[in-house]
Image 1 (tube, rainbow, N blue to C red):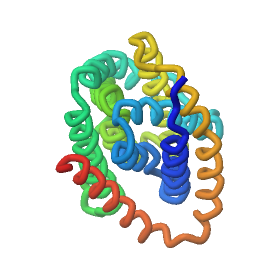
Image 2: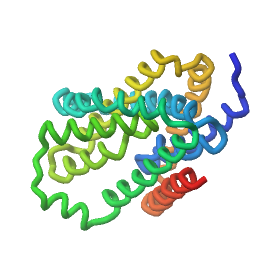
Image 3: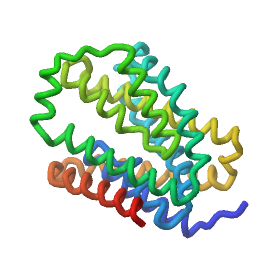
Image 4: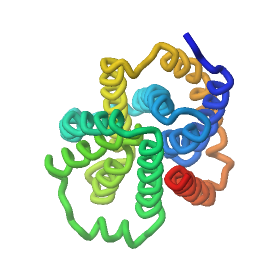
Length: 256
C-alpha cells in the first residue's frame, strides 16, 4: 500500500479549513476541498477522497435533523439522481486530468454564482416568491438528475439542488430544517452511490480509502471549531469572502 502521508497531511489541513468554513457559513466543504486539493494532488483521487469525507459530513448533519425527514420529498430527486449519476461517472472516467480540473473549475464558478444570487440578492428572492411556482415531480427529478451528473463527474452535486431548494424555501413549501434534512440525505445518497460505483469499477483503491479515513478526524475537528467560531465571526462579510474565494479557485483551476 503506497500512501504519501505528506500529501495526506496537507489534504487533512484543507478538509479542516473547509469544515470550519462550512460551520460558519453553512456551505463550502465540497467546493473548497475540490477547489484546493487538485493543486497538489491528482484530481481524480482527490474527488474520491472528497466523496468519502463529505458523505460522512452529510450523515453527521442529517442525524441532527432526522425527525424532519420526509420520504416523498427525498425520493423524487433521488429518482433523478439514479439516472444522472451514471452519466457523471462516465464523464469522470472519460476525462483526462486536465479536462477534469477544468470541469471542477467550471462547476465551482457556477456554484459560487448560484450561492451569490440566492443568498445575497434580494431581488432574486423576491422574484422567486413572485413566481408562485409549485413543486412537482418533474422539477424534483430534474434537479436530482443534474445533481447526479455534477456529483458523479466532479463530486460537487450542490448547485442544481441549491436552486431547487431555494424555490421550495421561498415559496414556504420547506422550512430550513426540512431542507437541511432532504439536502443532507440526498447528498449522502449521491455520494454513497458514487462510492459504490467507483468501487465496482476498481477506482476505489485501498490506499485512497485508508487515506480518506485518516482524514476523518480533521473533519470532526473542523466542524467543532466552525460551530464555535459561528458565534463570534462577522458571518455576512465572511460569506462574501468565501463566495469570492470559491469563484477564484474555480477560475484558477480552469485556466491553469
